[in-house]
Image (cartoon, rainbow, N blue to C red; front, side, top):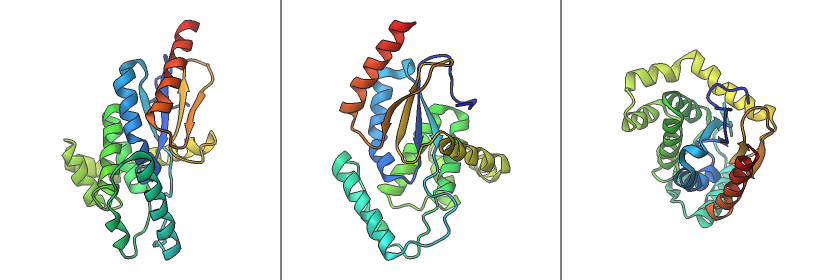
Length: 221
């Protein structure tokens, strides 16, 4: 995890997610629960995993039905809200790169802002049926989070932001992350990472395991 955003001097979590991943939206309350329970003792570091970056093909009937089925399962498992009028959109191109790039810009201000930005992007897409592939929508959401719109738009369109976003995707691929949400825990230094979850799990399954892991890490130091 050779990323400048990831602090390797102490216990931390690395969260691989995508703003347009429905199971990540389902997992969003778990991220908030982790922050409430552990706070600075166990910071969460966001890496954008790249669900469908660069897709250029409009959704067909089969894909639309498959995605709707996923949304229904996530709603049932997590209780997170969904606006199913999304499926009335014609010729929607499910390209997750723009929303991921917006999250990268937000993350630059702080990791806390990156995670808050991820939540806002998710809620806008899943619960408000807003098109987070549209730069104008992304700028409006950034303004809600007190970003300067002109600066955000410039950063969003900059080549270094495109490269940083692509680097996130490559990091996920390089270490073998193939689905989202995925979370790993690191004790810092050269200690190996421990898999926390590959896929959705509710907070009542995640939190006790993290508490045990953190206690074990603490007793080893």
